[in-house]
Image: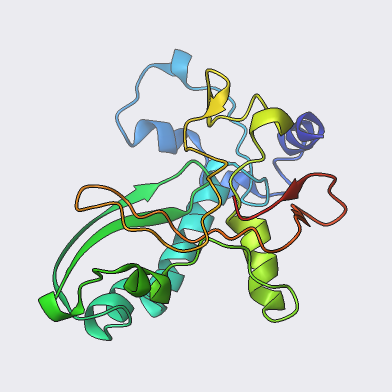
Length: 209
């Protein structure tokens, strides 16, 4: 299918008006004077998923959204988590064209999360109840489930020497357990409900592990 699309684009450059964004002058302007390197270029339009113009357009769309709904304002100014006294972050741009951020926050001493009950207020590692939270249930299954890996998909990128390098599946835990100053907590993952299908009409079932 992709080869067919590319063939149509190559044979119909005039219909997508590629002449508006390619020419011999484009090659001369950056200082390219070797005519052997100047040939007939095929420019995929932005409607071709994965093309440079498509990726650039997606990036512009994402940046426009970030300018209006910026995470930093919610976290640093509105204090939706707590009072932040210091922070550092890095933005990563993935191959799919959508950036994401890793942010480290240092909270005010009186607002720091120090007990399992504090963690449970803002962190949940369980699949939501479909009847009580149907919208969140669908989003978690679509975006937040690791895998499938293991016996269901041994070729998954997270697999290393026969097991998941991310540590899935996790162990069932009836309550969040604090591991100490240098370790992540073990979040509550209860075994109190049957497995659910990973996706609609999927034979693969997942649980809180």
